[in-house]
Length: 283
Ligand code: GUN
Image 1 (cartoon, rainbow, N blue to C red):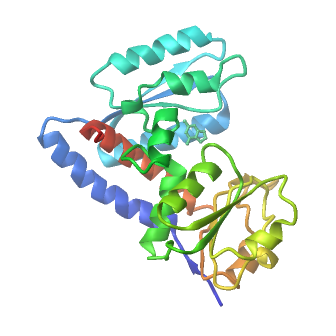
Image 2: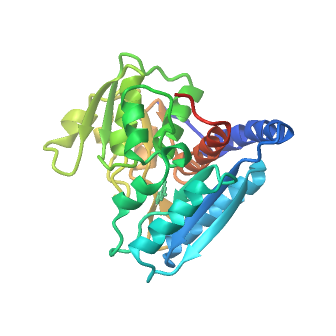
């Protein structure tokens, strides 16, 4: 079997065009969606991600601003900055780019963001609401993955989804989202013994481990839908995923590429969450 490639870039573009119309209509009603991004320090990867987010906002008609703070900022100063943004009615969404410098407690910062403005979906209130199936901000990468599966009408209900990776921002929440959609979910991670025994049973396989091309066709069940969340930079500067694309494409029914896969969808779901924040979430 040759897999159908799920082009995240094209899907993202299509969704952004739809969102652009929604933003126009919100503006006509006097609502101007606005995202504030907070960047601490000068991590080049973070800077590049933040530029991508600003560009996507601009394209969609969402206004955004970037608050750049020095690495030397204290935790208290950062928390004060977040408080100001919490109280600013013109700011609908707040995103603090991670990672933060070591002297700052990341969890404390995430929890300082008012849940109504938590467009990353990282706040414990957002996570709790997601777990109980309430309306909330879904974390952007898992939300993007779900949207990609749904865009191809890939059946989730009753299927076995195997997640490789258990990070708070991808692995754990994507498993929860698939469970909410009635999949049977297995979590695997760095201490899982005999990983293949699990991945070989996956109808839907989500790989988010951060190791280049580690998952080849021998890990795949014939006809599986495979989502590659990895973004690894090789020595020659090129980007590659966690999945060995060439071999897996021969065995899977669907496969996401890297680049042009999950990455563009993550930013798109951030835009969607910002629009949702501007409209106000339901209780
Ligand atoms: N760093 C890497 N990915 C993310 C993300 O999705 N949100 C934030 N805030 N920081 C990140």
